[in-house]
Image (cartoon, rainbow, N blue to C red; front, side):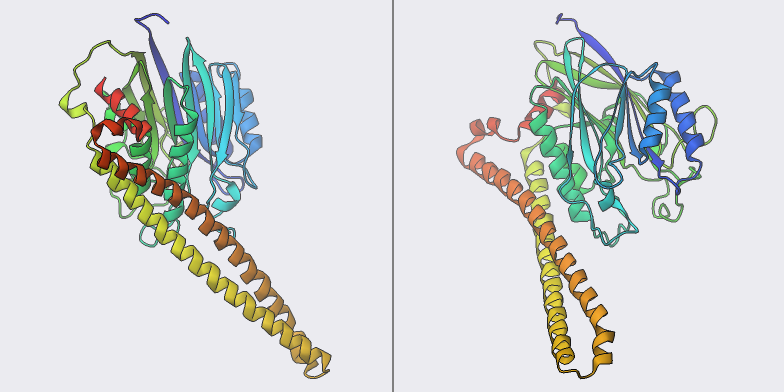
Length: 423
């Protein structure tokens, strides 16, 4: 690869709000999305909430002249909703389904049935290896009483670990998707600290779009206005994150968002706003003078974020075990009730009462038993993430005891992010 190597990468990301039978004007919005992507000719288009494989195949056929490579990530009962269209050949792809993803008995939310995941595409562009990730984390339905907060923190940690362990051979790492996390939320801070990824909105040299980079805005006619009442300008939950590894340097030249309407026709493409980033990759200069504002971050903030995440997961483990125990006791009481009904039936007494109570008793046992298993599985998933964080924090304490020279082996994702910032 020549020393003066440079590469421009244009990326598109959108949560498409493509839910069969529920989303408004699906067919029209997909048609206009396909026309827009073909007209713009991005290098990569990463989409979320394409819940219909039929719609994916429609887009694939429509986009194939410009984007010959495409992949839909299968997961869960109805699919992960994640898909990618690429102008360049795909060398490899895989995915990871998050261990925790809500509860099956919360049918009206539906996240559990989707099998939320992270998808990975590996591309080679002029000899440069690009790992492109697309993801969609669990939705936040009530910010004041968020019963899924722990699950999103666990998902953010799994996502960070997946990126860390699969990007060792990559020159550039790109993550796009709907994180369902505000910029200052714990999960977002944890993801950035551990991986060293940079936020395109914060780093770009030229931003054009909605105020404060919001990706759900009140001007969008498809948005639930009541959900945005506490946020006058809207919320920013969709991201383009990136970093360069080893001998490369990456910067975001431009970042654009739609502003509640399609740039061409005026009608929105989705209830979310699209993100369009232009990234520039080049060789790092052999010598550089890092600016004070882009030098290495202090270590205590990363440690505090890891501790905060560990505490949240620990509370989640306690809650999951409490619900599992409650459900277990309830199932036991149900079994005792069934045994009592069996004794009464054997004695041929109160047969009408037995028949009346048998079905509710059986339902109680089955329902409580299922809830017990669900929350036992939740507790184990949270314990796994907590153990990983505990191990990292233990290494941090050892590094502090041994001195600065040992810290080079710790938080590799953060060290890579720092090098990129310094360059």
